[in-house]
Length: 202
Image (cartoon, rainbow, N blue to C red; front, side, top):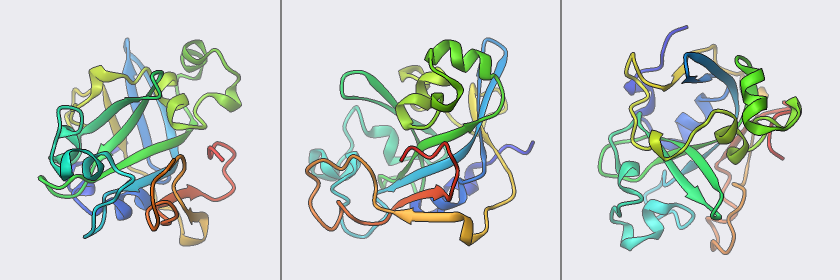
């Protein structure tokens, strides 16, 4: 399969988030391909005004911190962070260098390496990758992948192309887990899902 290159990601986060649906995320672990089809994403910081749900805008007056520096570019790199003291989250840096833009990959439909995913997750097939923390655990995604290029031929994680979904296959709605984020960012419809897919997180 064709590996997605930097130009695909060097676009606004909302565009990338929608276009990622149906693409394949691949993690090479101990020589084994663990992969899944992306069925749910969320866009962050794709606006002229600060996105108060986003790390890049919310912290340090919109300037990079040691935690968020990767999110400020260049695009086509993994932004992996730890949350709630227990979960890793896998994001893809998008847009242009210097501006904090990223897409959170929220759910996958498992394809390759299912037995290894199940061993890592210790859960049944239906619960392997139907959420951002779950897919990170199933693909052994952690801090070691933060900042890694997704476009190098020898990368441990990358994305492969696939035909785009038709507009009627894509459902759009508010992002999940916004906590105390104020409006309009709490309800802004920047979450994209493969309509009807059983691996969508909610």
